[in-house]
Image (cartoon, rainbow, N blue to C red; front, top):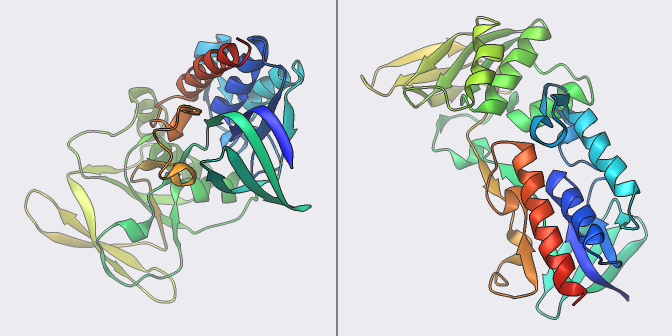
Length: 298
């Protein structure tokens, strides 16, 4: 059984920043772990610019931002355990991890949870119709296209106009695909104005407000969706072969269910609250890491 003063779960922007800050504060026994085998969380799949303006004074791509964070980590003695899925965290201050070497247990004095957030899937929406192939969350689509270079479809409908939905609309356009429509239930764009300009306006992508999906059609692959006008109640069939959902994020906290009141537990980044920018998640991780590191050396 291994022991450490500080265990950090999640090696995205918040987790790396927390680990570096705890080390800089004087804590010399820090373990950082992640289920992925690389540092950066989802950053390596984000090929667009828009990261690091606050932290580094210029816009970087996701991979470049992750590389800079990783460089900071190499200047410390933090131990990184990649490819470990954390199965459980107990009240006895122990984490159970599963990796290629089997099951292991790490006992800790303090824990920082930096597991990020998960996307709401199509299953979370009350939609009629079939559940065919060709439906992906925006994050899934981003990973499959940017990291694995897979072709997902040719006629795309995107539900949700948050930042990731708009970024993926642009990505599909750059891939030569037809973005039939971006649908937004609100009266205005759900993401940042700069992404609206860079993605929707710059690529002339159709966006329709006060619209949602009433029904999905097709089997075994999606052939279209019925779009509902939320003001009039009218429906319109929109043919497509791919549906991308970008309908929000949920903080990933399942590991600490029932442990929220423990004084040895801290949350950082998107598992604490969904941050609009990675810089904001990293700044919160840095603040939490420094505070916990100082407490541990008292």
